[in-house]
Image 1 (cartoon, helix red, strand yellow):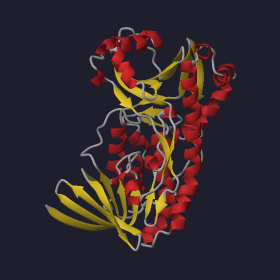
Image 2 (cartoon, helix red, strand yellow):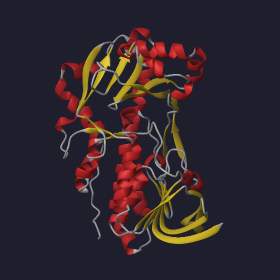
Image 3 (cartoon, rainbow, N blue to C red):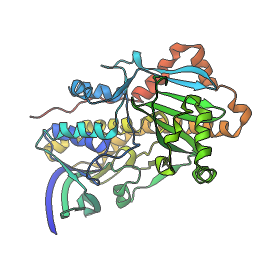
Image 4 (tube, rainbow, N blue to C red):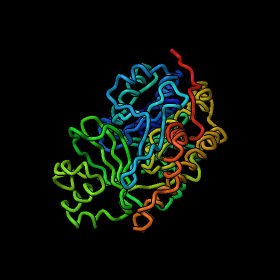
Length: 408
Protein backbone atom coordinates (compact mmCIF):
# COMPACT_ATOMS: atom_id res chain seq x y z
CA UNK A 1 0.00 0.00 0.00
CA UNK A 2 1.42 3.37 -1.01
CA UNK A 3 1.68 6.57 1.01
CA UNK A 4 0.90 9.64 -1.08
CA UNK A 5 1.55 13.18 0.10
CA UNK A 6 0.19 16.33 -1.55
CA UNK A 7 -0.25 20.01 -0.71
CA UNK A 8 -3.26 22.16 -1.60
CA UNK A 9 -4.52 25.54 -0.54
CA UNK A 10 -7.80 24.06 0.68
CA UNK A 11 -8.70 20.48 1.60
CA UNK A 12 -12.46 19.92 1.71
CA UNK A 13 -13.72 16.83 3.51
CA UNK A 14 -17.14 15.87 2.19
CA UNK A 15 -18.50 15.69 -1.35
CA UNK A 16 -22.02 16.90 -0.65
CA UNK A 17 -23.58 20.18 -1.82
CA UNK A 18 -21.45 22.38 0.46
CA UNK A 19 -18.16 20.64 -0.31
CA UNK A 20 -18.57 20.29 -4.07
CA UNK A 21 -19.85 23.85 -4.49
CA UNK A 22 -17.02 25.32 -2.41
CA UNK A 23 -14.47 23.21 -4.29
CA UNK A 24 -15.86 24.46 -7.59
CA UNK A 25 -15.87 28.13 -6.58
CA UNK A 26 -12.31 28.02 -5.26
CA UNK A 27 -10.95 26.08 -8.23
CA UNK A 28 -12.72 28.51 -10.55
CA UNK A 29 -10.83 31.31 -8.77
CA UNK A 30 -7.50 29.59 -9.49
CA UNK A 31 -7.07 28.05 -6.02
CA UNK A 32 -5.77 24.49 -5.68
CA UNK A 33 -8.41 22.35 -4.01
CA UNK A 34 -8.78 18.70 -2.98
CA UNK A 35 -12.27 17.37 -2.18
CA UNK A 36 -12.60 14.07 -0.33
CA UNK A 37 -15.73 11.94 -0.83
CA UNK A 38 -16.06 8.69 1.11
CA UNK A 39 -18.22 6.95 -1.51
CA UNK A 40 -17.24 5.95 -5.04
CA UNK A 41 -20.16 7.93 -6.50
CA UNK A 42 -22.99 10.25 -5.47
CA UNK A 43 -25.78 7.74 -6.08
CA UNK A 44 -27.65 7.55 -2.79
CA UNK A 45 -31.42 7.76 -2.69
CA UNK A 46 -33.75 9.81 -0.52
CA UNK A 47 -31.47 12.79 -0.08
CA UNK A 48 -32.34 16.45 -0.48
CA UNK A 49 -33.66 16.78 -4.02
CA UNK A 50 -35.05 20.31 -3.97
CA UNK A 51 -33.08 23.06 -5.70
CA UNK A 52 -34.49 26.34 -4.43
CA UNK A 53 -34.70 29.66 -6.30
CA UNK A 54 -31.67 30.94 -4.37
CA UNK A 55 -29.56 28.16 -5.91
CA UNK A 56 -31.14 28.67 -9.34
CA UNK A 57 -30.00 32.30 -9.11
CA UNK A 58 -26.44 31.19 -8.29
CA UNK A 59 -26.44 28.99 -11.39
CA UNK A 60 -27.41 32.07 -13.39
CA UNK A 61 -24.65 34.18 -11.83
CA UNK A 62 -22.14 31.45 -12.69
CA UNK A 63 -23.40 31.34 -16.30
CA UNK A 64 -24.43 27.71 -15.76
CA UNK A 65 -28.22 28.05 -15.74
CA UNK A 66 -28.79 27.07 -19.37
CA UNK A 67 -26.77 23.86 -19.02
CA UNK A 68 -28.22 23.18 -15.56
CA UNK A 69 -31.81 23.29 -16.82
CA UNK A 70 -30.96 20.65 -19.42
CA UNK A 71 -30.42 18.12 -16.61
CA UNK A 72 -33.68 16.16 -16.15
CA UNK A 73 -35.79 17.78 -13.45
CA UNK A 74 -39.29 18.93 -12.58
CA UNK A 75 -40.17 22.60 -12.09
CA UNK A 76 -42.52 24.00 -9.46
CA UNK A 77 -43.65 27.61 -9.26
CA UNK A 78 -45.95 27.20 -6.25
CA UNK A 79 -46.59 24.91 -3.30
CA UNK A 80 -50.02 23.86 -2.07
CA UNK A 81 -51.13 22.37 1.23
CA UNK A 82 -54.30 20.36 1.60
CA UNK A 83 -55.81 20.52 5.07
CA UNK A 84 -58.67 18.09 5.71
CA UNK A 85 -59.65 18.33 2.05
CA UNK A 86 -59.23 22.11 1.68
CA UNK A 87 -56.53 23.40 -0.68
CA UNK A 88 -54.39 26.34 0.43
CA UNK A 89 -51.74 28.10 -1.67
CA UNK A 90 -48.76 28.16 0.70
CA UNK A 91 -45.92 29.57 -1.40
CA UNK A 92 -46.00 31.38 -4.74
CA UNK A 93 -42.48 31.55 -6.20
CA UNK A 94 -43.45 33.32 -9.42
CA UNK A 95 -42.75 36.79 -8.02
CA UNK A 96 -39.27 36.18 -6.61
CA UNK A 97 -36.54 38.48 -8.02
CA UNK A 98 -34.41 35.75 -9.59
CA UNK A 99 -33.49 34.72 -13.13
CA UNK A 100 -35.99 31.82 -13.09
CA UNK A 101 -38.40 31.82 -10.13
CA UNK A 102 -38.92 28.10 -9.70
CA UNK A 103 -38.14 25.30 -7.32
CA UNK A 104 -36.50 22.43 -9.22
CA UNK A 105 -36.80 18.79 -8.22
CA UNK A 106 -33.59 17.06 -9.21
CA UNK A 107 -31.91 13.97 -7.71
CA UNK A 108 -29.02 15.17 -5.60
CA UNK A 109 -26.60 12.88 -7.42
CA UNK A 110 -27.45 14.63 -10.69
CA UNK A 111 -26.85 18.03 -9.11
CA UNK A 112 -23.51 16.93 -7.64
CA UNK A 113 -22.41 15.33 -10.90
CA UNK A 114 -23.26 18.55 -12.72
CA UNK A 115 -21.23 20.78 -10.37
CA UNK A 116 -18.36 18.28 -10.31
CA UNK A 117 -18.20 18.25 -14.12
CA UNK A 118 -18.06 22.06 -14.09
CA UNK A 119 -15.30 22.00 -11.46
CA UNK A 120 -13.20 19.40 -13.26
CA UNK A 121 -12.73 21.79 -16.16
CA UNK A 122 -10.22 23.56 -13.92
CA UNK A 123 -6.83 21.95 -13.31
CA UNK A 124 -6.91 23.29 -9.75
CA UNK A 125 -9.75 20.92 -8.76
CA UNK A 126 -9.26 17.31 -7.68
CA UNK A 127 -11.96 14.98 -6.33
CA UNK A 128 -10.72 11.97 -4.36
CA UNK A 129 -13.41 9.29 -4.24
CA UNK A 130 -13.63 6.48 -1.65
CA UNK A 131 -11.40 8.60 0.55
CA UNK A 132 -12.04 9.07 4.26
CA UNK A 133 -10.30 11.49 6.60
CA UNK A 134 -8.99 9.68 9.68
CA UNK A 135 -6.81 12.21 11.44
CA UNK A 136 -6.09 15.92 11.58
CA UNK A 137 -2.48 16.93 11.04
CA UNK A 138 -1.54 19.67 13.51
CA UNK A 139 1.42 21.92 14.20
CA UNK A 140 1.45 23.99 17.41
CA UNK A 141 -2.26 23.26 17.90
CA UNK A 142 -3.11 24.56 14.41
CA UNK A 143 -4.64 22.28 11.79
CA UNK A 144 -2.25 21.90 8.85
CA UNK A 145 -3.95 19.10 6.95
CA UNK A 146 -5.43 15.62 7.21
CA UNK A 147 -4.54 11.95 6.99
CA UNK A 148 -6.94 9.85 4.94
CA UNK A 149 -7.41 6.31 3.69
CA UNK A 150 -7.98 5.52 0.02
CA UNK A 151 -8.42 2.26 -1.93
CA UNK A 152 -4.73 2.54 -2.84
CA UNK A 153 -3.34 3.34 0.58
CA UNK A 154 -2.77 6.30 2.82
CA UNK A 155 -3.11 9.90 1.66
CA UNK A 156 -1.56 12.80 3.53
CA UNK A 157 -2.78 16.25 2.53
CA UNK A 158 -1.20 19.40 3.90
CA UNK A 159 -3.35 22.48 3.40
CA UNK A 160 -3.63 26.14 4.30
CA UNK A 161 -7.21 25.44 5.32
CA UNK A 162 -9.23 22.29 6.08
CA UNK A 163 -13.00 22.41 5.57
CA UNK A 164 -15.41 20.02 7.27
CA UNK A 165 -18.36 19.63 4.91
CA UNK A 166 -19.04 15.99 5.74
CA UNK A 167 -22.59 16.24 7.01
CA UNK A 168 -24.48 15.83 10.25
CA UNK A 169 -22.27 12.90 11.35
CA UNK A 170 -19.12 14.88 10.58
CA UNK A 171 -15.85 13.14 11.28
CA UNK A 172 -14.00 16.43 11.00
CA UNK A 173 -15.94 18.20 13.73
CA UNK A 174 -15.41 15.18 16.01
CA UNK A 175 -11.67 15.13 15.33
CA UNK A 176 -11.52 18.87 15.98
CA UNK A 177 -13.45 18.50 19.25
CA UNK A 178 -15.98 21.18 18.31
CA UNK A 179 -18.95 21.38 20.69
CA UNK A 180 -22.31 20.32 19.26
CA UNK A 181 -25.52 21.78 20.71
CA UNK A 182 -28.50 19.53 20.02
CA UNK A 183 -32.12 20.61 19.74
CA UNK A 184 -34.78 18.15 20.79
CA UNK A 185 -36.73 17.01 17.73
CA UNK A 186 -40.14 15.30 18.15
CA UNK A 187 -40.43 13.77 14.67
CA UNK A 188 -38.91 11.29 12.26
CA UNK A 189 -39.78 10.84 8.60
CA UNK A 190 -40.53 7.74 6.54
CA UNK A 191 -39.53 8.05 2.86
CA UNK A 192 -40.88 5.79 0.13
CA UNK A 193 -41.83 5.79 -3.54
CA UNK A 194 -45.19 5.14 -5.15
CA UNK A 195 -45.65 4.95 -8.92
CA UNK A 196 -47.72 7.75 -10.44
CA UNK A 197 -50.90 6.65 -12.17
CA UNK A 198 -53.26 8.17 -14.69
CA UNK A 199 -55.56 10.68 -13.03
CA UNK A 200 -53.15 11.60 -10.22
CA UNK A 201 -52.90 15.33 -9.44
CA UNK A 202 -50.02 17.04 -11.21
CA UNK A 203 -48.41 18.97 -8.41
CA UNK A 204 -46.18 18.71 -5.39
CA UNK A 205 -48.06 19.28 -2.16
CA UNK A 206 -48.37 18.57 1.54
CA UNK A 207 -51.44 16.90 2.97
CA UNK A 208 -52.70 17.41 6.52
CA UNK A 209 -55.43 14.98 7.46
CA UNK A 210 -56.69 14.45 11.03
CA UNK A 211 -53.37 15.41 12.54
CA UNK A 212 -51.32 13.29 10.13
CA UNK A 213 -48.91 14.87 7.70
CA UNK A 214 -47.58 13.58 4.42
CA UNK A 215 -45.65 15.36 1.67
CA UNK A 216 -45.76 14.18 -1.94
CA UNK A 217 -43.09 15.30 -4.41
CA UNK A 218 -44.05 14.87 -8.05
CA UNK A 219 -41.07 13.14 -9.68
CA UNK A 220 -42.80 12.64 -13.05
CA UNK A 221 -42.88 8.83 -13.04
CA UNK A 222 -43.34 8.38 -9.30
CA UNK A 223 -44.32 10.12 -6.09
CA UNK A 224 -41.56 10.59 -3.58
CA UNK A 225 -43.49 10.44 -0.33
CA UNK A 226 -42.58 11.60 3.16
CA UNK A 227 -44.75 10.58 6.10
CA UNK A 228 -44.12 12.45 9.34
CA UNK A 229 -44.17 10.24 12.44
CA UNK A 230 -43.47 10.81 16.12
CA UNK A 231 -39.84 10.40 17.14
CA UNK A 232 -39.13 6.76 17.99
CA UNK A 233 -42.50 5.49 16.70
CA UNK A 234 -41.08 3.50 13.78
CA UNK A 235 -40.86 0.21 15.73
CA UNK A 236 -44.53 0.51 16.73
CA UNK A 237 -45.52 1.17 13.11
CA UNK A 238 -43.57 -1.89 11.96
CA UNK A 239 -45.12 -4.01 14.71
CA UNK A 240 -48.60 -3.06 13.48
CA UNK A 241 -47.74 -4.53 10.09
CA UNK A 242 -47.35 -3.42 6.50
CA UNK A 243 -51.09 -3.71 5.77
CA UNK A 244 -51.86 -1.22 8.55
CA UNK A 245 -49.20 1.12 7.18
CA UNK A 246 -50.68 0.95 3.66
CA UNK A 247 -54.13 1.64 5.09
CA UNK A 248 -52.89 4.71 6.94
CA UNK A 249 -51.32 6.08 3.75
CA UNK A 250 -54.59 5.58 1.89
CA UNK A 251 -56.59 7.26 4.66
CA UNK A 252 -54.33 10.32 4.59
CA UNK A 253 -54.28 10.50 0.78
CA UNK A 254 -57.26 8.62 -0.70
CA UNK A 255 -56.13 8.90 -4.34
CA UNK A 256 -53.20 6.61 -3.41
CA UNK A 257 -55.61 3.74 -2.65
CA UNK A 258 -54.39 1.68 -5.60
CA UNK A 259 -50.75 2.72 -5.36
CA UNK A 260 -49.52 1.23 -2.10
CA UNK A 261 -49.36 -2.41 -3.22
CA UNK A 262 -45.81 -1.70 -4.50
CA UNK A 263 -44.70 -1.54 -0.86
CA UNK A 264 -43.81 -5.22 -0.55
CA UNK A 265 -41.60 -5.08 2.55
CA UNK A 266 -40.14 -2.64 5.05
CA UNK A 267 -37.05 -2.51 2.84
CA UNK A 268 -39.14 -0.31 0.53
CA UNK A 269 -39.50 2.27 3.32
CA UNK A 270 -36.59 4.35 4.56
CA UNK A 271 -36.41 5.88 8.02
CA UNK A 272 -34.88 9.34 8.29
CA UNK A 273 -34.03 10.05 11.90
CA UNK A 274 -34.52 13.80 12.09
CA UNK A 275 -31.94 15.84 13.97
CA UNK A 276 -31.40 19.55 14.46
CA UNK A 277 -28.13 20.73 15.94
CA UNK A 278 -25.48 23.40 15.57
CA UNK A 279 -21.89 23.97 16.49
CA UNK A 280 -21.22 26.51 19.21
CA UNK A 281 -18.06 27.43 17.31
CA UNK A 282 -17.69 26.50 13.65
CA UNK A 283 -13.92 26.71 13.49
CA UNK A 284 -10.53 26.02 15.04
CA UNK A 285 -7.16 27.39 13.88
CA UNK A 286 -6.76 26.17 10.29
CA UNK A 287 -10.20 24.49 10.14
CA UNK A 288 -13.81 25.47 9.38
CA UNK A 289 -17.07 23.50 9.30
CA UNK A 290 -19.96 24.43 6.99
CA UNK A 291 -23.29 22.95 5.87
CA UNK A 292 -24.79 20.16 7.95
CA UNK A 293 -21.43 19.71 9.69
CA UNK A 294 -22.04 23.14 11.25
CA UNK A 295 -25.84 23.07 11.52
CA UNK A 296 -27.86 19.91 10.85
CA UNK A 297 -31.28 20.79 9.49
CA UNK A 298 -34.67 19.10 9.63
CA UNK A 299 -36.26 18.15 6.27
CA UNK A 300 -39.06 20.68 6.96
CA UNK A 301 -39.05 23.05 3.99
CA UNK A 302 -36.37 21.05 2.18
CA UNK A 303 -33.92 23.89 2.80
CA UNK A 304 -30.85 21.94 3.95
CA UNK A 305 -29.13 21.59 0.57
CA UNK A 306 -29.65 25.26 -0.23
CA UNK A 307 -28.37 26.50 3.13
CA UNK A 308 -25.28 24.35 2.62
CA UNK A 309 -24.72 25.89 -0.81
CA UNK A 310 -25.17 29.39 0.65
CA UNK A 311 -22.52 28.54 3.27
CA UNK A 312 -20.15 27.49 0.49
CA UNK A 313 -20.66 30.74 -1.43
CA UNK A 314 -20.12 32.87 1.68
CA UNK A 315 -16.98 30.91 2.58
CA UNK A 316 -15.53 31.39 -0.90
CA UNK A 317 -16.43 35.09 -0.95
CA UNK A 318 -14.76 35.78 2.40
CA UNK A 319 -11.64 33.60 2.10
CA UNK A 320 -10.68 33.34 -1.57
CA UNK A 321 -8.31 36.32 -1.66
CA UNK A 322 -6.20 35.02 1.23
CA UNK A 323 -6.21 31.46 -0.13
CA UNK A 324 -5.19 32.67 -3.59
CA UNK A 325 -2.32 34.68 -2.09
CA UNK A 326 -1.13 31.84 0.13
CA UNK A 327 -1.77 33.88 3.28
CA UNK A 328 -2.58 32.36 6.64
CA UNK A 329 -6.32 32.18 7.27
CA UNK A 330 -6.88 33.88 10.61
CA UNK A 331 -9.45 32.94 13.27
CA UNK A 332 -11.07 36.33 12.64
CA UNK A 333 -11.69 35.38 9.00
CA UNK A 334 -13.16 32.02 10.03
CA UNK A 335 -15.37 33.75 12.56
CA UNK A 336 -16.54 36.10 9.80
CA UNK A 337 -17.95 33.10 7.93
CA UNK A 338 -19.76 31.86 11.03
CA UNK A 339 -21.06 35.35 11.79
CA UNK A 340 -22.35 35.69 8.22
CA UNK A 341 -24.10 32.30 8.05
CA UNK A 342 -25.04 31.50 11.65
CA UNK A 343 -28.08 33.79 11.79
CA UNK A 344 -29.76 32.36 8.64
CA UNK A 345 -29.23 28.79 9.84
CA UNK A 346 -30.45 29.39 13.37
CA UNK A 347 -33.55 31.33 12.27
CA UNK A 348 -34.58 28.56 9.88
CA UNK A 349 -33.94 25.94 12.57
CA UNK A 350 -36.23 27.83 14.94
CA UNK A 351 -38.98 27.89 12.33
CA UNK A 352 -38.48 24.15 11.79
CA UNK A 353 -38.75 23.45 15.53
CA UNK A 354 -41.95 25.52 15.73
CA UNK A 355 -43.52 23.65 12.80
CA UNK A 356 -42.46 20.25 14.11
CA UNK A 357 -43.80 20.88 17.60
CA UNK A 358 -47.10 21.97 16.04
CA UNK A 359 -47.24 18.75 14.01
CA UNK A 360 -46.85 16.54 17.08
CA UNK A 361 -49.32 18.60 19.14
CA UNK A 362 -51.99 18.32 16.45
CA UNK A 363 -51.42 14.60 16.06
CA UNK A 364 -51.97 14.11 19.79
CA UNK A 365 -55.01 16.42 20.05
CA UNK A 366 -57.86 15.11 17.87
CA UNK A 367 -59.98 18.25 18.38
CA UNK A 368 -57.06 20.52 17.47
CA UNK A 369 -56.26 18.44 14.40
CA UNK A 370 -59.68 19.29 12.94
CA UNK A 371 -59.06 23.04 13.05
CA UNK A 372 -57.05 24.71 10.33
CA UNK A 373 -53.94 26.41 11.73
CA UNK A 374 -54.17 30.19 11.87
CA UNK A 375 -51.29 30.59 9.39
CA UNK A 376 -53.13 28.52 6.78
CA UNK A 377 -56.38 30.41 7.42
CA UNK A 378 -54.59 33.70 6.73
CA UNK A 379 -52.94 32.34 3.58
CA UNK A 380 -56.25 31.01 2.33
CA UNK A 381 -57.98 34.35 2.82
CA UNK A 382 -55.14 36.56 1.57
CA UNK A 383 -53.49 34.69 -1.30
CA UNK A 384 -51.00 37.50 -1.93
CA UNK A 385 -49.35 36.62 1.39
CA UNK A 386 -48.17 33.34 -0.16
CA UNK A 387 -45.26 35.44 -1.44
CA UNK A 388 -43.93 35.66 2.13
CA UNK A 389 -43.27 31.93 2.74
CA UNK A 390 -42.07 31.74 -0.89
CA UNK A 391 -39.43 34.32 -0.04
CA UNK A 392 -38.43 32.58 3.20
CA UNK A 393 -38.31 29.07 1.73
CA UNK A 394 -37.12 30.02 -1.74
CA UNK A 395 -34.47 32.62 -0.90
CA UNK A 396 -33.76 32.07 2.76
CA UNK A 397 -32.39 34.67 5.11
CA UNK A 398 -29.48 36.73 3.79
CA UNK A 399 -29.07 35.07 0.37
CA UNK A 400 -25.54 34.99 -1.01
CA UNK A 401 -24.26 36.03 -4.43
CA UNK A 402 -21.15 35.08 -6.39
CA UNK A 403 -18.25 37.43 -5.59
CA UNK A 404 -15.41 35.13 -6.59
CA UNK A 405 -13.74 35.64 -10.00
CA UNK A 406 -13.08 33.09 -12.69
CA UNK A 407 -9.35 32.65 -13.32
CA UNK A 408 -8.64 30.83 -16.58
